[in-house]
Length: 317
Image (cartoon, rainbow, N blue to C red; front, side, top):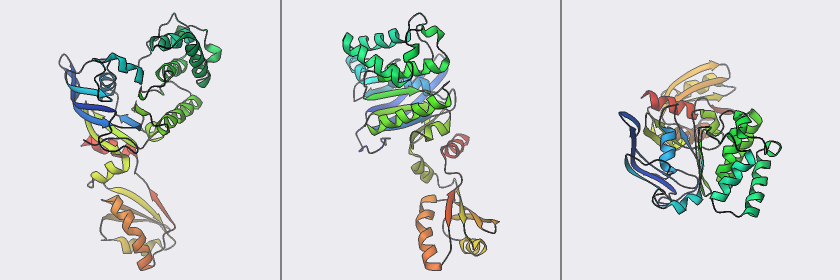
């Protein structure tokens, strides 16, 4: 079992799931999932209904698995509730207490975590300002817009400085500026050494926060690791690369039949499109070809080395 997360040695898992499953009646929401997450930001990706939220709730100790074991820092939260202090959770649902003000809700969350009144007030002020909710702090949550609700949920997940943070579709309903600020915040948390597991069905959002991902489909983990590593593990899925050259025709002729080259297309007088079945080896070998054979390559563009391409390929399989 690999540990996903930037700069984490094997065995340094902060979040782990061992053959975890969850079913509701005859509906299987999560099916035999095993994963391990270390420090840094990791994206949990899957379409709506793939089982992301159910897996999140099990990992965060909110619901119990039907079978298997989930641990945070090696402990089962549902059996050692004191460890909830080290966990922050932003749920996908918008179930805020409609009758409370934003400030009251955030203060209650911090008091329940054991903070005194003065420290609670300090933290409430900080996070309301951070999410630009200061002007709305005395309004009832029932009058908040979707984006404001989302920011308030994020604030309560982070206000107690947790080491492990679960963010389930955290950007839903946010305007573009708030979305960018929240993405920057997630990246900042990763640089601080926190463990952030963030779910989304919008692939470009996750790519903007991290390259470490877990792909889930129909309750099963399909792949985990860095995007480039996952691409490298499925060599039958070609990568498409464009090479810009003033001598494109000669370059195309040279590449035909070379190792790791599946096909070559002369797209224009200055552009060759190559499909490779092993992108890493192709990129390693290309410089030596250029030097040894006097080829001219001004620019290399990877056309489909994206999370969306990987996810589509794996789910279609």
